[in-house]
Image (cartoon, rainbow, N blue to C red):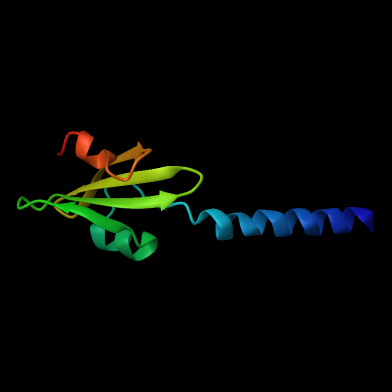
Length: 92
C-alpha cells in the first residue's frame, strides 16, 4: 500500500511539471511554418522582406528558444538566455 501511495505521489509531481514550467516546443528541422505555429504557439519576433522569419518560445527551465524559417521551412534553431538574443545571431 505504501508503494502505491509513493507511485501516485511521484506521478502527480511529474504531471505538474508542465503546468509550472510550460511545455517544451516540439519541432523537426524542415517542418513547415504553419505546422510549427499550430503545435507550439510561438511569438513572431522578426520578419524580413525576403520572407525570413524568427519565432521565439519561452520555458522557465530552458529559457528562450529561437526558430529561424526561410521559405516557410524551419532551417535553424538556437537557444538563448535573453529575449533579444536573436538579434545577435547571424540571420539566414
